[in-house]
Image (tube, rainbow, N blue to C red; front, side, top):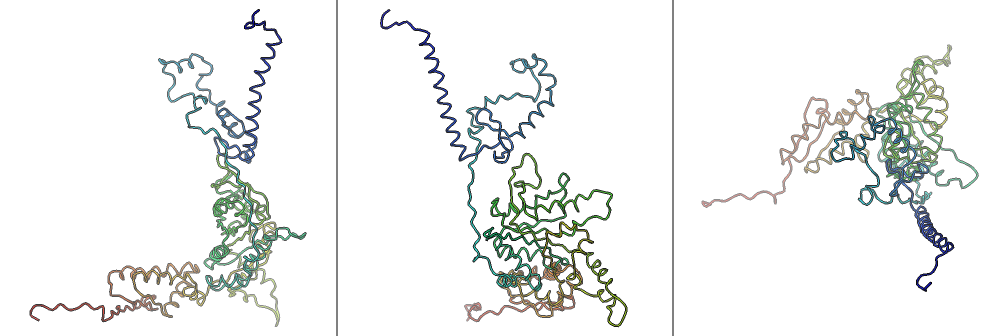
Length: 505
C-alpha cells in the first residue's frame, strides 16, 4: 500500500459516522438555545386566531415557524373530518386527475401545500409578539383631591344635588385612598360600590361623567338593558369591562383603576312571572356579583362576546369602582305602602295621606324596599352606599340654565358670538323655560328640546342681516305671546362710509 491509498478499517468508518451525527446535533442544540433566548423576550402567537401563548397554552408548532393553538387545531380537524371531498380520498384516480394537466378535476376545489408558501413572503418566519412589560405607577395620595375640594369642583358643573355630591365625593376619595395604600397594613379595606336612585333627567349620568373627567380616570358607561345571561343573544356581562378597557386604550393596569357606571340598573329586577327563564333579570344580577366583589375576569378585547377568534385578557376588578344608577319608577309606591303600615289612630298618630304628596319619598328607601322591587340580597350587599337624587324643581332648572360652566344658554351665546351678535336672556325667559320643562316631566333633558324650538328661527334669520347687534329673549317670546327684542349694531363715526362728491360739487 502506498501513502495515498491506505486500508480503511471498520473502526474508521464508525468514527466518521459518529462525527457526522454529532455535527447536526450540535447545530440543533445551538438553534434550541437561540430559540430559548428568544422565548424569554417573545411569545408565540396563533396563526389563525392571533392569540398569544400566554392565553392559549402550549401550541402546535408546524413548519416555517407557524404555531397553531389547540382550539384552532381541533376546529380545523373537525371541519376536515366532516367533509369527505365527495369521495376523492377513497378514489385515487380522482386525485390523479387533479394533478394531471389534462384532467378537469373538481371546480372551485384546490389542495394547498404549506411547503409551497416557504420563501414567498406571505407568512412571516416568526409568528411572535414581543412581551410588554409595564410597571404600574402607584397613585400619589397628594394628587387625590379631598372631599371638600372634589365637591367644589363638581359645583362648577352640577347644580343642586348637594347630598349626592357629598356622598360621591367621600366614597370616591376613600376608594382611591384604598387603591393607593394597597395592603400596606394588615387591615384590608373593602370596596364601597354605590347605588344611585333618582328620577329621569336629574343628573345621574352627568354627575358620574363629570367626576371621571375631573379625576382623569377611564370611565365606562354601560346600559343594563342590553346585558343577558351567557349563551343568549345580547351582550355578555364581561362586555362592561371591555368598554372600560377601550376607554383605557387597552391598558389593563390603567383600566383596573377606572370607574364603571351601569345605567338603567332598575331594569335588572326580577320578573314576577316565574314560569319563564329570566335571562336579563335575576341571572344578570347573579353574574354581576363576581365583578362587584372583585375577581380575575377574562375579558374579550374589542368585542362584546367571547369567541375563539377574539383575543382575551384578564382584568382584576378588585380596584374598579362600580356605580349603579336607575330611575326606579315603581319604588315610590313600595315605600309609601311600607310607611302607611306605621300609621295609626289617635291624636299623635300619622295620617295615611301624609306621604301621598311627599316629593322626596325616595330618600326614605331601605334594602327591604329594594328587595321587594326585585333585587336579590347578594346583589344589594355588594352595593353598601345607597343615596338618592332629588327631582328638579323650577329654581334648580333656572340655575341649570345659567350657572354651570357649560350651561345650555351659554353654548348658544357662544355660537352667536362667532357671528358678532350678543344674545341676552332676561329673568322671565328663564322662568318660562323652566315651567315648560316641568310640564314635560323629563327633567333637565327637556331644557334643550325647548330651547331648540324657539331658537330655530333666530339662528336662521340672524345670519341674513349683518346689522343685528343684540338679541334679547323674553318670557313672552317663549310663551308665544310676543317676539324677541332685536337691536341694530352701533357703528362708530370713524367707520361710516364717506359720501361720494360728484363733479358738480
